[in-house]
Length: 445
Image 1 (cartoon, rainbow, N blue to C red):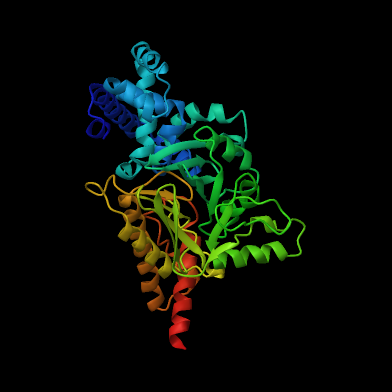
Image 2: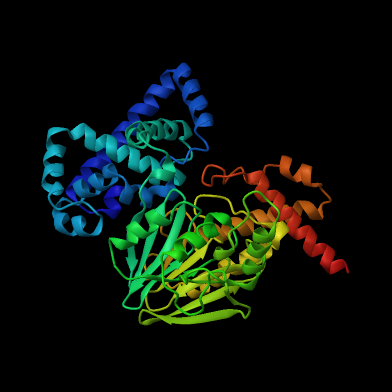
């Protein structure tokens, strides 16, 4: 557990207290049926909560003052390094350490809430205890968020490696490459985030935004194209509509351009702004750009999440931005109506794994920036890919037995993953069924 990763005296002591807490709670549950029943009800109520799930643990550590405090306490011998790398002001570290000696129970409570989020897959036999730990974590973290809406929260610019950063917020992630040539973004979030995006990047560099690369047409990634591009300077092809002031170049696959063009020309009250349509579209399997001293490869992943998906490889920085092809902690969304297919999604994930190189034991090395959620590496994608393949095979097996979609959904094929992945498992199964059915129809022609 903690002591195996953070090899310090503090970590060992916290680990011991956590295990003692587990033993006490199990004893209480064994002797109190009413309490066990209430905890089971709480587990059902909080199943879909994003509070402190395993897949958001990295974000929690970086964004939450309690998460940074926990790391500071556990890394007592590395205070200065921690302050530099985890965003804890150096002046705060001595006071945090002093507070830990005055309130040791706060340290244990903090550690318990963290372990409940990180070790969820290891504690499946204790779902009721996980509910309790989630509530403890919620009680400590929900108070600051109550003062404002989630989408009003500031965005955090987190260093990844090389020239690449991850701009993280509740609305999703943006991969940010910073250098002498300017700033390159992968996606632009939705409408209304431009000022916060510019403010977060402005804290790191005064350089202008020159490129915005879209990984798909989804509006939570492209809705802010026009607003963010207008704040920048074009990198290659001026991408705003005729008559508009030039801004950052918008790059995407041709299918993204076509779908956003359809939205822009639709007769709706609030059509998509034409200034947000990528005019630097590529049609070949790969588009390469030299920027900030490194080659950047934009690669099309056909018929995966949709028909216009791209991944972006920053070769020197050894980082891949993958958009919604990989959603850690959430079931995939396969947009079958817009060309998505489970087979294409698996091919895309395998391609990401071909590009990623772990440093040791599948950890470290290439970093993976998803469209939302925590920063990942190859091992996370392997686990996610395996889940998709296993559920795909289950659906295909029942289809071969002649079962209907409703019968397959009733079989609850994702039930062993539902504690690990949020979202609608039935919708995921249905998209797989439709994908395989479409392939069968094509083969029958």
